[in-house]
Image 1 (cartoon, rainbow, N blue to C red):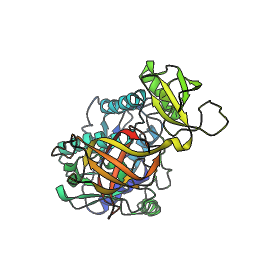
Image 2 (cartoon, rainbow, N blue to C red; image 1 turned 90 degrees about the vertical axis):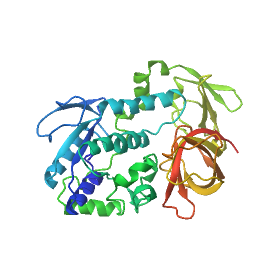
Image 3 (tube, rainbow, N blue to C red; image 1 turned 120 degrees about the vertical axis):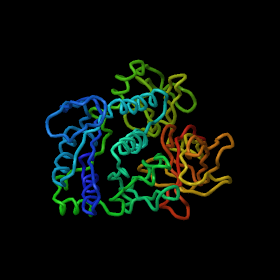
Image 4 (tube, rainbow, N blue to C red; image 1 turned 135 degrees about the vertical axis):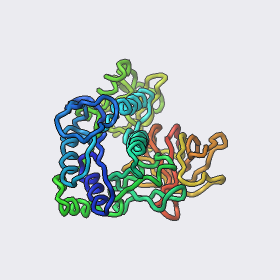
Length: 381
């Protein structure tokens, strides 16, 4: 329970349907704020009833106010409420975030959080208390159970979150419940009001929860002090057109804040970490024809021949028609992980960036998530 309307309604629906529900708030120890906490490194052995000291993010889905809201919702529903201390594990996500930027890639911490914590660490805790499943307020659906189950897009495509769930291990799909995935967001808010939940009109979170004031570059520099190394900004021909204060401050596709004047609209089209150069160019220079992908997590048997798919390479970008080929050196283990594959787009796509996740949907059944992985390389047309 994150304290938002979606997870609150998910808990309310499960309680209404007769499930024995336990609410859990993930203590992540993000910088910026504190909430009183007594227990060191594990989930509390008893419901939270008094003030505690928790270092936690001040925005997004894990703030002090969110913790208080989640507690109020649990009280309204009459369910136990626990604070789970995942501070050490969340530090891994912050380190990943900083290291990806230092390496010149564009990270996606929300996907990693779902993979490592919400459907990783939290599943471990569920097993410890004898819970059969972990439920969340994601806009996605599970069809079937066990190894034959399918992960599907949420009915509300404008809120669909199947993209950020592609990394959930296959084995956990049968122990995963997504109660609101079959509803539109407007209906979820209506149900929150019907259930008497005080968060029915609470705005959705937007920012990354552990980045103070949305200053991701400042966080990277705090975590990795050597990141702020000045270098050259060059055009696609190698001509120096400016200077930067650290390549981690730029992402592929960025247009604003370049501090370079060349008389036309330009974008960050690449970053060369070895030479500490940021490359700028025209919009056409952002086009990518194909990308290499690693850390594959297949939700179906990996194809032994090229297969047509819809490939989504950013959360807020529509999926594009493409062909996927599993690489010969990308052997896939029983878990469906560790493989490599290549995505070749029918039409070149804009600002496909290394470090982002690419998620594959069935070309014939566009709601069905086939798998996905992490972009390791890109190829121009």
